[in-house]
Amino acid sequence: MIEIAPGVRMIDTQLGGRSGLTSAYLIGGSQPALVDPGPETSAGLLIGELHKKGIGPDDLAWIVLTHIHLDHCGATGAVAAAFPRARVVVHERGARHIAEPARLVAASHEVYAATAPLYGGLTATAADRIVVALDGHRVPVGDADHLEMIASPGHARHHMSVLHQASGLLMIGDAAGSQLPGGGLYPNVPPSDVDISAGRDSLKRLSARRPTVITVSHFGPTPDPIHTLADADDALDRLGRAAMEGYRAGGRSGIAAAVDRYIPIAQAIGNPEVLAQWQWLSWDLNNILGLEIWAQRQMAEQATR
Ligand SMILES: [Zn+2]
Image (cartoon, rainbow, N blue to C red):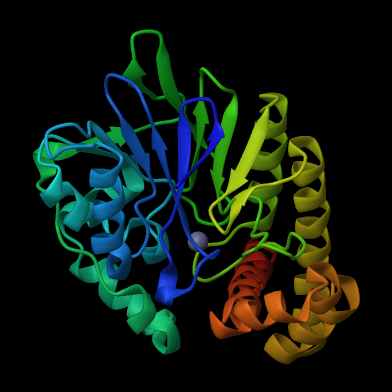
């Protein structure tokens, strides 16, 4: 656990037993908050880390979710059970899945079949412990300090980024992509409701908030917030054009070829070991599948115009 901004500590939730892949954030205060508990398979480790840092069973006030993909929210039920006073803050589109997770877990395991065992599932949290967040929602963490939930659709329709008022740290989830230790930034555009245009609009809105530090879920603070947002926007622009051009030329394989031309992943990441981590998680393949679904939707919308 390391302090990445005043009052904010990062916890490596060690997806699949590997460090440097998934991160959770503990925001200190009279009402401590945990942002993105991570996959269910890491719940035991995370709860142990919180106890070690003096967060007793009655201390945690909030579990805040950037979105309900299992690598971010899977441990929610287990953490909520270990900290019975904590309430879960989540986008309105995600709330019902936290209370009744069966459909979400089944759908996720179908899409991410190969890597599903790494993530595990998600156990239910009682509906009366779930707080629905809309854009601008404030989560109080201390006397004069709060987290602001900023709607940032793109990676998923229900994605939210979390701005820490006191430090200016922006926990951006997957809205800017991933930057694993030792590698470059590259977008995550997985199935099934990725939206490139919405993602670019979200990056512009986040940029206007002038964050002092940006931390990506995978993994940790980036070197420069403004560059991170500009790079992410440029990358989404290229991926969007690659998706449309590639899809028209030849469906899924056409998209893969066009992505290689517009924004080759090996070059952008620039480190073979980091690329191997992406491939181990199937993030590179998931991107092509996500872009295919988005391109299909774009074509259908154009046809009905
Ligand atoms: Zn993620």
